[in-house]
Length: 433
Ligand SMILES: NC(=O)N[C@@H](CC(=O)O)C(=O)O
Image (cartoon, rainbow, N blue to C red; front, side, top):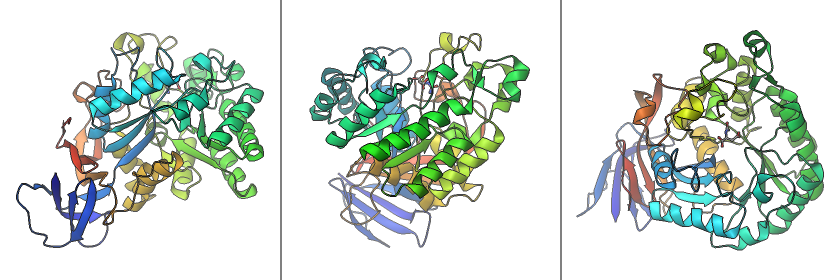
């Protein structure tokens, strides 16, 4: 299968370039490349070519909640969002805490064939935070698990977290922590601050996140482990990470921020619409500004969606009982363009860094986030930087429709995604193999 991409702006820079892709690789770069017989041509005039995006944090809900998302529908959303690899969180039913479950998820991803689906293994049995899961068996399984997380729950017991990091060091895998001290967030519904106080919502204080991150970087320092901090949501956490990076040379700590924490703040909560309920919660405008700065400066490494589909009956209910979480895979690029590119904080090379290169490096994916050069794997995304589109939850590929961007017009549109040289999405349609 051969594809010729014509006139693309590589990383949004320089002269328009033609890119020939064959047998899963970039085989030729140049200008005026001739179209060969049987070749699919992608006219990329005015479009930006980047390495395909990598999402370290996705909830695909299969097994267990196929009424809200399946590995096939989530893979479609990912391909349409420009992703070539996603990491599927372990909070499924059954929990992905054994080789059997992670191998099942991996296999289902291969069957869907739209994006590389990497199962995340649970750190503790049943996500209960009591006993370590069989991390070694999951790492050694056919799924080759490289990222472990109890996401949705914090590994709050410091001794258990220390042990998890020690095992992770031995296995050379990453522990991704959902940083939330549970004793500080009992009954929490929204960010603790003036908005929650006015609305009568129980607060989720910043310190519940910041204290766990501070503890964990010290545990990572002592164990030499690779720690990844999920969904950083506060200015204070960014400061803890900055302090850790500057005072502890050799520290192997990385961090992600979600698109929604880069764009939305808790001023949206006055409607009590649970579409805005998410964990960690939307914070204040000053946090949003600090997170944007930290991402631009590399204090936060990457963007991860925390794509969290929920059924209507879990969202269209009272704020207090509604499930937290928002869709993210198909809107991530546009939100990053709005929050980071339009504001001048990142150029397209920066977008490639935070959405492709750093996440691939953090998860040790050798074939993703690679330079746009001859001989490199053709995991690619073509973006129209000037297009805008209006988000409609019902039109997204996910089964669930809980997008906080409903009706919003956002910039930047994914035109095509290529996985190992095969077009997986083009002009809003997916192409399963
Ligand atoms: N991020 C979310 O708001 N929700 C996540 C889990 C969680 O972190 O609570 C989910 O699985 O729905």
